[in-house]
Length: 81
Image: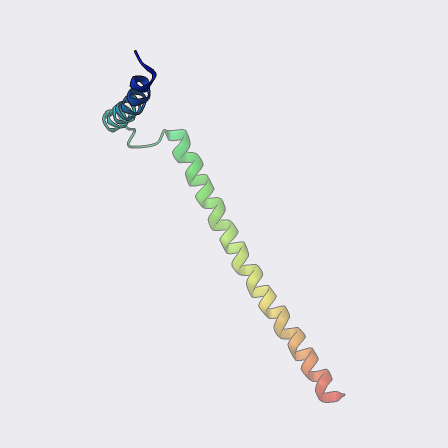
């Protein structure tokens, strides 16, 4: 077999192998629902994220309050001085 024959066959074999892998993945059985431990961990993570979002909202409210107090104090000093 001559070298130019091999260089023609390599891409053809690659294309066929790629197509075979894609077809095998299409027909491979897929799990529709995650295992119970994964679902439980996911729910726990969701609860943690919700808790963090609540804490974040509370922190933003406190920051807003502190900014308003500082602004009022500056305004009072400006008026007095």
